[in-house]
Image (cartoon, rainbow, N blue to C red; front, side):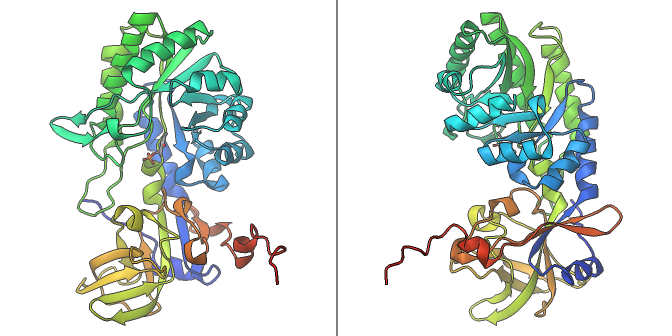
Length: 419
Ligand SMILES: *Cc1c(COP(=O)(O)O)cnc(C)c1O
């Protein structure tokens, strides 16, 4: 069980008096706490760093808060690299874990001296031609088949577009060594939103074993094992959060068993690229009930829509909803909570039991900190919302203004419309 916490009605009213709904609200305290907890869990590894996945919450104020907590960034596009650069990240503080990468993006990442994580064997020659090969390179491994934890199939990596096969890893490392690359990293991302405490440890064992094999086959030296993202959060109250301290300890046990005695490298770093774990529970989408509609079902129409939070429409994802100020009221009404898109998937909740909602009530949609605002889009000409930071002292600050129609029209050309 997980208690679903959110800001009080009083706090929301105070913010909404200045910043119209909808908006995403982020907890600075929560973000710092999560960064701390991660650092503590992996403190046994002196080279540990969390490379926050920028795509989860791409806002410079947020990235800077995480930078202050010792995090780096994981980027996978030109604009994410630019954002990282503008916040002041450089060199080893940037992981570039891209795929189907355009030439100019490799060139940009090389200029920043970012750690390059190659997604495919053909990218060896491509990177050599576009930016050049660095002395250290990380490779993304896709073991194929089923990914099993205990007895349960947790994912099908073989169906995913990412990474080198096992045979390609051997071939790729051999070719990179011939081309003068001195040290290697190994990365994998095998399942998403995993709250199972054995996700990282299971994958860590696979990566550690594979590094040892590559070392034994080719004499390759390793500087880093990158466990990537994928640790999940309890979106539903009945789910249980991952115990990050325990996860860290289990990875440590695997490290001491496999890496420490192996000689694959000096002080091999273990790093992570978590997005959801760090940011997910520290964001809420604040929206207001604007319509109530009773037809074959009972609908509450809100002023946010899937353009502000795509996960329910895209994945059927559950996001908990609290009606602000009615936390203790009985959940005795069944509603569909819907946005305004001309798209029937635009539903934040279906058949959800909630307290009776009046037009004007504030609804808090939980766990929108990761892959929330950032997945936004402009379908139906809907505009992206503001982002607001709730500080540790209870004050707030707008950290992104909402889009205006001028933003929507900025890329359009009306000069060539014939009469
Ligand atoms: C999306 C992504 C992440 C972050 O994933 P989460 O599920 O948010 O932890 C990390 N690394 C890579 C390469 C990704 O694509």
